[in-house]
Length: 270
Image 1: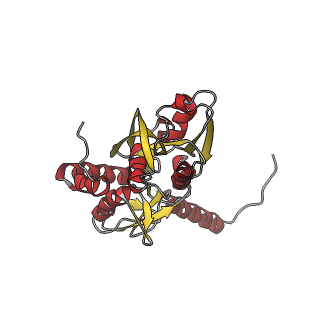
Image 2 (image 1 turned 30 degrees about the horizontal axis):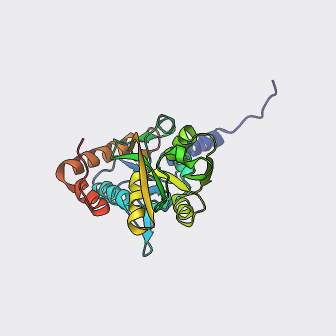
Image 3 (image 1 turned 120 degrees about the horizontal axis):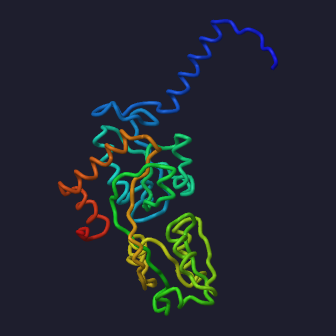
């Protein structure tokens, strides 16, 4: 065992104080202010939301502003906290692995993100706020209605998504899987014929087909998925606040209003 020189008491005190300060700052750099000072935020007065653009109608950029279903929903949480929402566009991998929470990049994630056991290990989720399933999109008139029809063809999926996992599991031999960084690139590849078909969440694909009538959704796969807002593990105060807002919005009609704004119809009741 090697001997170390004695450290002055004043230096020890300063080191302990610095360590304690560091611990506090890694947890939070501010509070919500306004209505609920118990909720800790990365930056004071701002609710930072990690997402990955584009993913319409949940989030996309229009006229220099990020808009969408998820944006409007999280705005309700921000209003309850008396702060402004700030969108942080980041690769989806950083969101779903929990890395963006570990580096204090954001307070929560709203990215049309399905609640899965693997993701639940690296983050905490809100109550489910949206029911989704996987769907198949092709160019209009193409005979692709199930995976078996795609033998000998290229089939696209978005990286790090449940649609990609489903395609890897269900696609038979002879189907060439092609990965894309985001849904915009995937849909452009379907439209141009770079891939014969693509898979993604049904809400996103139906929105795209409305604007691109030369494409169509030819099949849905009942995967029983539900979206949740993601939070740093242990950030219970903010998660519980979001849960309360979502539940209240579903009761008082604000949720239905947002849903109809982006999907043109009221949500189906289970």
